Image (tube, rainbow, N blue to C red; front, side, top):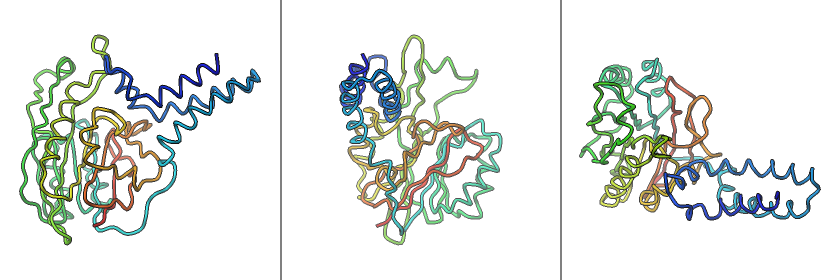
Length: 313
C-alpha cells in the first residue's frame, strides 16, 4: 500500500497536466503542486516503520519528479545589479491601514509601483501618500501604476471578467463593471518599457461549481492575447493573477513571459495569504529584460504580500 501511494504521488505530479479540469480539479492540483512534496517524508516515515524496501524504492519517483519541477526554486538565483526595481501588491479593498501600506510601499525602493484592488475611497489617500516619491501615476478602475519615470500611451485592457456564481457573494449594491487591467509605457533611460498591471478574477471552492475559475480563466486568455499583440519587445506584467504559474490556465501568458521569481528568486516566493503564505498568486512576469533578483516584501495592512523584482537590460 505504501509503495502504491508513493507511485501514485509521483504520477500525479508527473502527469498533472493530464488531470481533467472537471470542476477545476486540474487547476486546484496545480495551484498547490509544490506542497505535494510534503507527502514524501510522511510516506518515508511509514516505509521505515514498516521496514518496506519496496516503498522506499517507490519513493524515488516522487522525489525525482518534485526535484525536476521545483528543485530550481530551492536555490538562490539572485544576482547583483539591475536597472529598475518594480513592486506589485494587491492592497486589499478592506485594508485597515491604507496610509501605512502606502508609506511602506513608498519606502520599498521601487522605481515602478503597481497597485491592485484600489477602491474609490482609498484612491485619494494613496495618491496623496505616494505623490512625494512618484511624480507620475495613472489609475484606471481598480488598478494603478506609480512611477518615478514618465508614463505615456496608457490605456485600459479588457480582461472580460465574468463573476458568474461569485455574484451572490458580493455585497448588495456592489458592481464589478470597473476596469481591472491597464497598459502603459514607462520611459526608462534604456528605452521604452511596456508595463501591464492586472487583477484577474477571483477563484472560489463552491459546492455546486467545484473550484470555480471561469472568470479568472477568461481574463487570463484575454490578457495573453493583449500581450501577444504588444509591439514593444520589452514587457513587464505586474499584478494579482489569482493563480500560480503552474496552473494550466496561464499557459497563454507563461508561453510569452517568464517569471522573475523562477529565474532570479530565492525560494518559492509565496505571497498569499499574508499571515501564512501558501501560494504565489502575485506575479512579476517579464519579456525582453533580464530579472536580476526577485523577493517578497514584509507584510503591510493587506491580505497579500508585496512582490518585487530588480530587472536589467
